[in-house]
Length: 221
Ligand code: ZN
Image 1 (cartoon, rainbow, N blue to C red):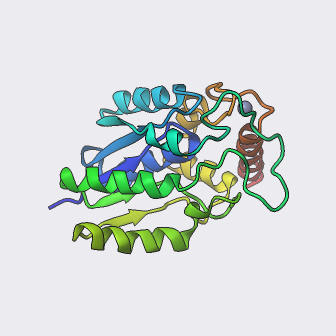
Image 2 (cartoon, helix red, strand yellow):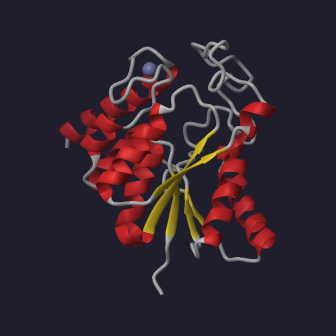
């Protein structure tokens, strides 16, 4: 039996690149995606994800998880908390939602098992580690064991971006033939501007710097 994969898809650059990594690895007919509506400022990112999935013929379901916002207020979910321009020294950025990946992957695992899916795909990344402890490889490996024990099931959590920097993530998108799609149709910007973004928030800065670095490498080969 062919393995099936569930991609945790937010509509940003990283998770959308993972979606295409999964369709390449598992075959489009064996991939579906899940998103979480936790009160993030920009629902548009979920709309980006839904639009791409619709075009690709991939099933996409958005699960409401208001509990995350009820438990912890932060700059990603609260209009009245501005996003830090620069990461404060020694503390995580104020866009951190504590335990978000723990919860998302646990919810995804429950959904996956219910649908006979074993493989989970997430865009977490340790390379550009910005103080999000549940993006680390050691956490993902630990969670994989925990989920298997919790549900008596053989999940495999895939993290194709774990050791890539932003420029290498663009390179992966290019290799998968979706550079344009990722560039134009995903939302990473904290100010909610699809594609190129506002150009001035920290997310836009990292995204553009990675893109420019990759283009420079590509053009110099
Ligand atoms: Zn921006």
